Amino acid sequence: MKRTIFNTPIISPFLRLFSNLIMRLTRWRVEGKLPDIPKYVLIGAPHTSNWDFVLFLGIIFRLKISVRYMGKAELFRPPFGWFFYWCGGIPVDRKKSVGLVEQMVEACNQSDKFILVIAPEGTRYQVHEWKRGFYHIAKSAHIPIVTAKVDGINKTAHVGGMFQPGEDIEADMNAIQATFSGMTGINPRKKMNKKYITLEN
Image (cartoon, rainbow, N blue to C red; front, side, top):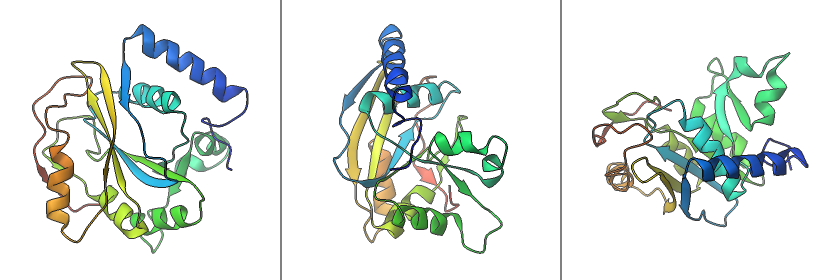
């Protein structure tokens, strides 16, 4: 198994203990559990703050899973590229003839375990549309979509809702987004709009 920040001996257990301590001190908790399957796309929303990354790490360490994320190919170049690989990053090369979805499907097919984390909003600012990249990746790779919903008011992350992409993308997107209704994120804001666009995440 590829060594990352989530499964490196000695370092990972220490970070997990530290992360759990921070979660307790800040009174954040995680409810639910993730499916016991090797591959899926994990979407998290609402994305409203720079602190979401810290919360994301806390959730991942609490659940004791290893995840992957997408990053610009330039981040993975020497001398610091190793760090982004170690954090679970997968380089995305926009200059390749194949698109983002195809690159992620290839990475999925080459892995025994593949949990790809995506923020479908694409930004921490108020958005009226979700990007569909996560959906196309899951459908093309024949893996399910799992949700992680951030309830900032009650300081709770709800994980575990699972969807298998079908033949009606409009119905699927509406169903997925509906499960996030009422979620505020770390910084409360207006309710999420149900519109979305076809650009890849």
